[in-house]
Amino acid sequence: MSIKILALGGDGIGPEVVDSGLQVLEAIAGTISLKIDIGEDLLHGAAWDAHSTFIRPETIRAAHESDALLVGAVGGPKWDHITVDGGPEEQDGLMKLRHELEVFTSLRRARAYDPLLSRTPFRPEVVRNSDVMVVRELCGGAMFSDTRGIDGTDKNRRAYDLNEYTEVEIARFARIGFEVARRRRGKLLSVDKANVFMAGKLWREVVQEIGANEFPDVALTHFFTDNAAYQLSCRPGDFDVILADNLFGDILSDQSAAISGSLGMLPSACLSHLSAGGRSEKPAIYEPVHGSAPDIAGTGVANPIAAILSVAMLLEYSAAERESARKIEAAVASTLEAGFATPDLGGTNTTQEITNEVIRQVLRA
Ligand code: NAD
Ligand code: IPM
Ligand code: MN
Image (cartoon, rainbow, N blue to C red; front, top):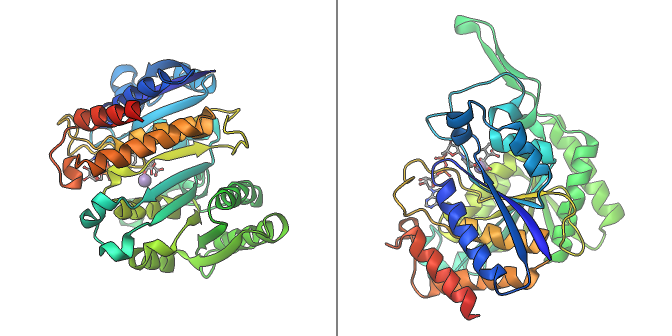
């Protein structure tokens, strides 16, 4: 089998961690009959510096022609103030790709690792064995609204971003969330602010209806998002799959990173569908949940585990290589057990030392 991958390092630590992810991918591909064809390009700030655009049309074309994209991270103080003509997706190379490929579902997983329990803000008995999957809507809501702007002058300006969801958008996304829950422990928690927002009321109604009609075997509960955030910070072990809109999912996925001890640990898969066999017919994006971490960029100590685990998700969801995905996850766990850790986890290892050890463990398995 062969797979066409477009690697886009992006900005800050993005290229550093994507490089680690690709090293692991190449190592494991050599042990199975997986042929990988990797193309590389610039994204967002790096593309702006070279081509005065956040993403070139040829990059978008290459994305459409790929099976999977591996993205590092985008943004940084050098570019965050730049605005260009057009909607929100034009302001950000990664958002443009999510929009173009219509990957409206982001699976973001946070797990507790025994060697890292003491690195979390939780007591070990509270966080041990936690395994939370935030399923975040990725192409709608206030973050992608065209009804946005800043009007007026002087002290009378008004700013707005319409928080809008159609029934179709909620339903197609909820179905994937239910399916993910079915493949895990059959539990789904949907979060919203149905007590305040009209978009939240429709959200709850549609999720409830899809659950009752199509997924009666999945135990569905609803929380208001503020309460969900509170409960998640008190008893993370009680959570499994959390279904959230674009904004709430962005926040809750970063929050859930505390379970793993660092934001540098969380991978994601951005999908437009969940194929039964694990070979996605449409391009998907795999990316760490973290950003470009300008504070540590170029120092060689970024935690590459989020990017490496994103490669595991790529193998699982786009290459039907579930066994290889499990091998990478096990290699990451063994690396941590052997005491390897970057500074964000309280250690002194470099990005490359972690990568080398994960590869060693992968090849040993
Ligand atoms: P950030 O995620 O870049 O960093 C937050 C904190 O976590 C920082 O202290 C950073 O050093 C640390 N951190 C993040 N990833 C790490 C890793 N792999 N290893 C070690 N430490 C890590 O968030 P921010 O500082 O709010 O944003 C910086 C830039 O990144 C902004 O331009 C923002 O828009 C962008 N951003 C991009 C993405 C993305 O591309 N998916 C996600 C979030 C933020
Ligand atoms: C993320 C990031 C992005 C988002 C930004 C960089 C646009 O925070 O992937 O979580 O909000 O989606
Ligand atoms: Mn985010």
